[in-house]
Length: 274
Image 1: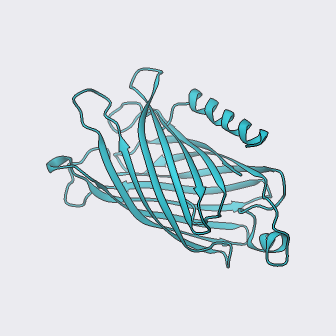
Image 2: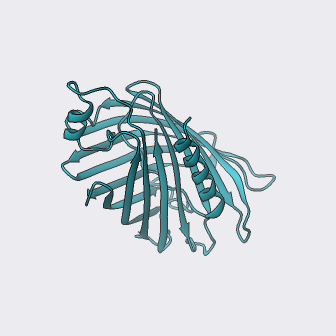
Image 3: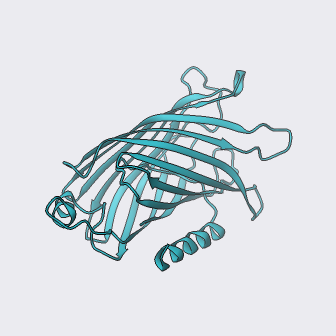
């Protein structure tokens, strides 16, 4: 691991220690063999539907095992209400299979299956085990990017009133203003089981503007470059060169669209690819 990767890990660790948040994630369809991506994802919400604070963060590590298989491991951290002390609260993992490569024609499609274990905050409570399965689609068109996630989610060992089945979604519309700066709109939501209206904290939907700033250290070739640029730099007629390290900073504001969702949620994140 070179000095840029070490600095990136240090930066992500400092962010994690300094900021309270509720993690929100948006998955990409593309997979590249040997590529490693670190993701720090967070939000800060003043209060939720019950008037309590939400403080959670997540760090994910992704690795392309083949040109079509991606493995992800994530670690969640939670701040107890009224305290400034983060605790390890969640472990998750997923496997993603790329069916259509977005670098070939601009459209990408993948399937994802994941599992998460949320540890009980208090003694006497049981851990929550859930899984999700669904699809990821995206389309690149000139300077535009359209991306969507849709997953079915369910409680694995829940019973009676504790059992949950529903859908989770995320979407992104992004426009590249320049080589480094992008603007976009992102939306996130979870919908509970239709015949169980008594479930709490599940029907949450939010949408809002997001800014993106990206830069590279190393060679100019990037998986996030346009399809034409990738073909010219590293396509069949180009040299097979290392892509170097790519950084992307994200910051935005999401607005709740239902009564069960916080009015305003601040979102920020850091992605590092090498």
